[in-house]
Image (cartoon, rainbow, N blue to C red; front, side, top):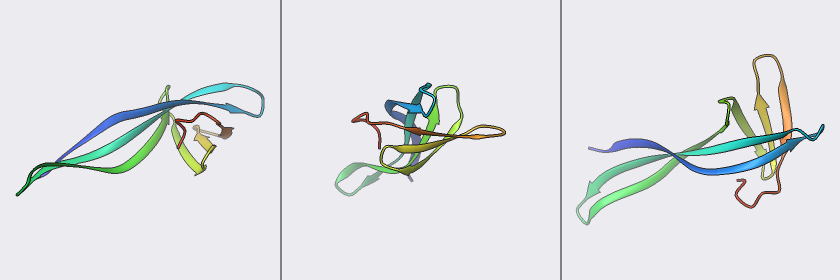
Length: 83
């Protein structure tokens, strides 16, 4: 039987066109189980959220959209930790 955990795996900064800075957190879902050769841990889906818990969509490496209640904010990042 496998167990699923979600862990914070990375943090990076991004900015919008007005120069506002945002902290974006990456979370990874891990599936843990056992095989005949022992414990097994496999990384699964990744998700992005701002540090104040807004969803973030990845457009492409370095380009993201922050999803707010009534608007979307396009941001970019050249941080080496940005997916």
